[in-house]
Length: 292
Image (cartoon, rainbow, N blue to C red; front, side, top):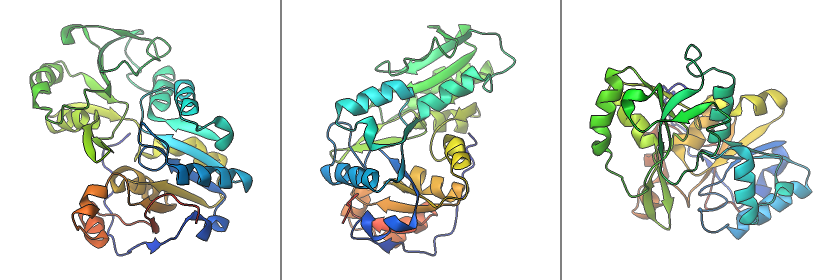
């Protein structure tokens, strides 16, 4: 939940793979990002779906992971509608589910009385777990005990209009809980906003934040404990969240080039320049999640 993700040097280039079958025998546990690797919110990438089926047939342990703010049951239903059925993976890890658990365990704002009066930033109403977390919505920041940011208008890449609201919230010493640390996603080559932008702004303005999601290790505590000692590989399309998460966990990573950083690569930014810019390098690189 800490914002201080370690920035690592990037001396490696990452071994290029034709497909996951090149290295599958080296790992027992696979942690695979959803958006940009398996689907883009509207369509499932068939090579990735075939890869999931092959991993299942080989008896591998597969965790799907996402910074989506939905709770796990809602996420499973959504994926099933896309054709990504529960038989293809061992468990789904969502930022929303982890945030819910932290509220239920009273790790977030433990001293404050429940239910917490909550100012929601939830465009699209993706947070279906507020009641279970003992959160009750309020319309005015003056009434709030906390701010919960789960989803924003995707078109609002400029977050400066939130500054007056945040100034008032910081004056009241409110914590902003961000249930999706992503700042952007890429869909059909278009950049869309995520509430990580708001978390970043609140933090820069001097506000106290709690981020739940990749790259923070709290997302994978249970996985790493359950499979301690087993070789694991994290697969993702974002150097910022996925590959940094693997570094935080001290496990190997596979960087998928066709997702989050595809625009940078398309305009000619080299992989070595990307690694230097973001301060991280993966173990392996693949154009898309292919089996090979």
